[in-house]
Image (tube, rainbow, N blue to C red):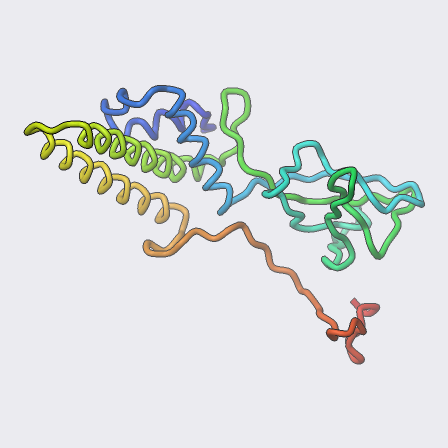
Length: 230
C-alpha cells in the first residue's frame, strides 16, 4: 500500500466528522501543512547529494532544496564508494555562510578529481498531489496531529461566535469550545503515542549523535588523542 496526500486529508477530516465542513478547504490544507512540518521536526526526510572534486575545490554549492533554518548535515561520506563507508568526523566539514549564500565546505580535505563527497542532509516532508514523502507507517500519526489542529480551529471559531453572542446560546457555544479542545488534546496524545513521544513529553527537534572529540579551550588538541589520530 502506498498512501497519498489525499489519503492523509481524508484520514484527518474523518476524525472530525461533518463539522469539518465549517472550515474552508484552504484553511484545512494550511493546517495539514502545519502538521506535516511539525512532524518533520521529529522525523525529518533524509536526502543525499554528491559533490565531485577537481583537485582544488573544497567549497560546494548546496542543493537548491536546502532549507535554511531547517536543513542540517546528518553525515558525510568521503571518499564515497568504499566497500566499508568512510563516515568522516563533523569537525572536518561545515556549512558555511558567506556573502554569496550558504555552502558546504570541507575543512580538512580537498577532494581529488576522482573523489566524490556524499552528503546526507535533512529536509521537511512534502505533502501535495505531486509529492508525498511521509512513510505509510507514519500517515496515521500525522493525520491525528492534523485532526488535532482542525479541532482547535473549530474551538477557536466557536469561541469567536460566543464572544459576539449575548443570548442563551452562549452556554452551548462554551460547551462546544470545551468539547473541541478536549478532542484536540486526545488527538494530540494519539499522535504522540503513534510516534513514540511520551504522553506528557514535548517533541524534540531532529537530532543525531556523533563521536565528537573536543580540544583544549586555547585551541590545541589533547596530548594522548590528537585530531590526527581520528
